[in-house]
Length: 437
Image (cartoon, rainbow, N blue to C red; front, side, top):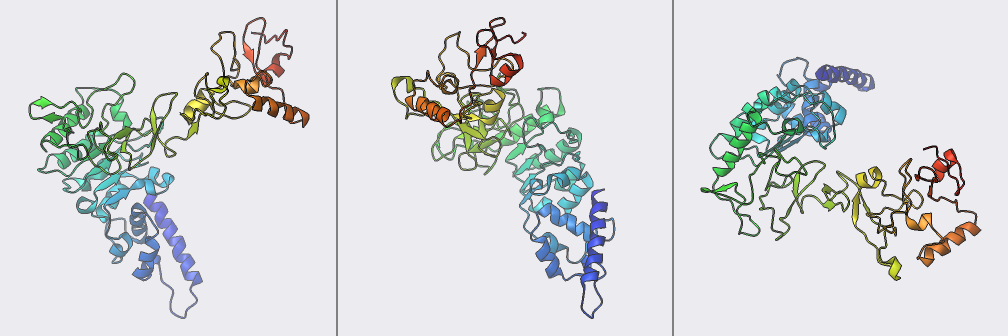
């Protein structure tokens, strides 16, 4: 188990400390006998969950009794408890008992305002019991996995978690501002489910707070319902898919995941405009995260953290003699590679056929039908390019022996296009490129 592994490490460290002790005094029997100042200084380099695991390793018994140095090791400031700060492999091994001990030792019910359970895939939710009835917790992230497409199996259960969440929102004047739910709970709308019923209770909690106006524009309400009239902005948590293009069911609305500030989501006064990332499925204001819009898939993603972006190198006005104007539209990494938007030769990325200086002629080819690799117009037709600089560069490479012919060709039989690599498999003749179908 996790605790057993940690205690084994404690014994090895203790033996090492004894061997290195050169004073006349007897060496300490174990690390727990070291001065609390040394232990506290060592623990100060660790994230809070790791501090509690260290504390458990120093404790000889299997119960929750702690040594006198516990407060020095664990510390006292625990407003944010983020399991994403510890090693992924370690977080994946934590059981409900481990998480329960961490919450108890940090006095989470009275101190923790933000709990992020990143990578705790073994947790069923029983370990969250110490949070029951908390009057100060404002945010809980139960998503476990960080990104859409992460297919790791998670054990978190509605049966264990929802009663604890109810204890946080049913009390008078709840502090809760944001809940991030697991993807496995949100895959489809099941109106008869316990989870769907909880979403209704959660929205009712917000309604009980009365009208909340957007702090930026001061005009629009960010409340799901204003008295008897339904507000146009929408619910705090979506209870339907909301869109045909994306399933927003169970995702939060009108609150920034980072700073927990309210916003109507429609004004852009002072940077309050909210943006939804389609990778992590979180909503951020411009102050908490930078999101880029991909011109190919037409979705927004957190820059760098969720996806890398490339700038379109196309010069759509080259045919008119303007070689300086660059398109510059953003393309996310998935669209560059999955849709083969990067030229195999010059490694430039293009957002559209037009930007790669391709025409819309049906007879023109721009990618290999076998490996789907893409060639921009200048690389496929260096002598036909309207860009004189590209032509000059081609001749310079030929004269210096640095140019390898790489041209897309069509098979006379099946009309499929082949790149240079695929041509080597099927034959090089332009007149008779027999690719065998």
